[in-house]
Image (cartoon, rainbow, N blue to C red; front, side, top):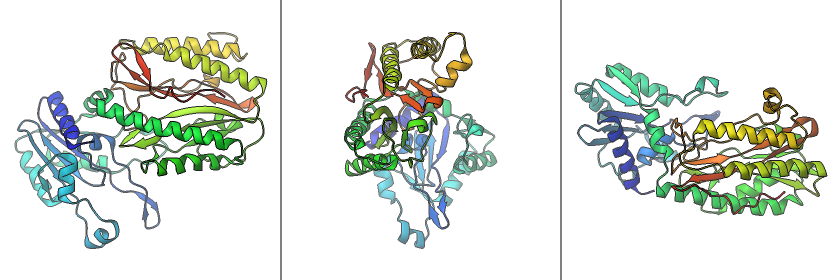
Length: 402
């Protein structure tokens, strides 16, 4: 992305907020083990506004006056030698923000701005974060508490950013398409390796090797390579089980390219599939195509979900798992997850709380049937762009064949 992309995003946010003051923080580094940091990935909203990939920076946007600053973190000599840091000139080139100040200068600047602005906008932790099974990056909370000490009112602008990010710009669509293309190439080579692979992790390694050797790409999320009953654990990431003959192997994998993610799932047979495996796979594949065909601008999300439920209940009925179409408990036993989510910088990107689909949105379509008692799990997932006249399947080049 070029700096004018990030500059334009800041201008759009300022316009949406009617001017005013915005202060966002980067994530901070977190521990992996003992004295080692975990691999760093930037907070998506901060990256969307700045393009900065390093931890502990701040961005200050005074929309009322058209002023912008980056606040650089303090990096001591030892960490500079071992880890390096982003230079002032590099930060300017990436973000398009000319004024870069030290941490102490940034705090003085904020205290002065607080004399002119009673309200400051920032982002809070993600919605429903109390349901997460992991600790949150502490930078968001620390930034909010710092602002609360200086300003009369601290307002969360996360919904405004979500609405902006939900409609993908041409350069974003291009980046996502590249991530999808790299992922499709990975699936193609990995499917060929499935015939001789003995463990799930060998298939994961095929993807990792392909991503790394292609533009230095990486996984957008922990890959799922799940054979047999493992596929019925929706976020299975152990990927360490020995592959058995006549098993289905579900692979949910996506590359990250240029800051944007792909998210694709295919289910393949290890050896000749059984009649039952083919039956379940065909039911999912047919539902997958029917559900994609529903997508168009103006479609109410509520109506989309209603039609998906109707179609997936029919699929479960076809394979003998659902007799009563009003039996929600059994329906959710065999299809327990949502049909779609947004896709972008975050793998689970927000669609901005929209009531209906709009051109420029990118979302997944991922029907599945999971039968633990039969050790069968099938999911097929593609990435779909909503266009002015309908939709475009960005991952259609990858066959869904078993």
